[in-house]
Length: 134
Image (tube, rainbow, N blue to C red; front, side, top):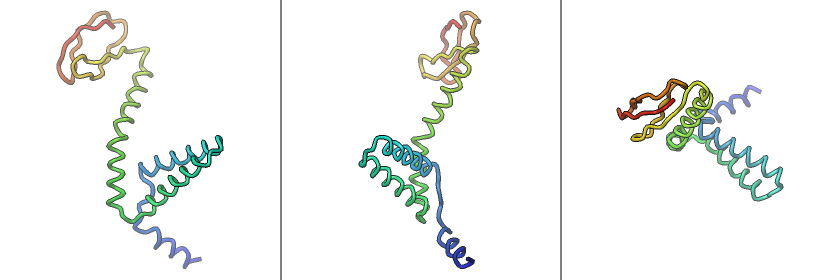
């Protein structure tokens, strides 16, 4: 058993494992696998198998700079989407306390407490002023 453990340790040393892109790829493959089994589409099943293989390749690859570059590209694309989703969730959660407006010049989100009447609002990002009723 000791030789087997040593062989596994040597095999996995220098490998990165899952990162954010790898996790997203695994989730996509899982969703496609479930859809393929529900719908019975063999082409979708084949596509999910290819995606599983790519996820496994990325996790076991020793070319760490290339995998980091791929992950950085993914995060550059994915992080703004996550930030927008979190902000939308916060706006929805606080919808009874605040009214949210967009700045007419820079389109930044601004909030005003409800039921305070008409106020002159100054955008913290670009300094534009405008009147809004809250």
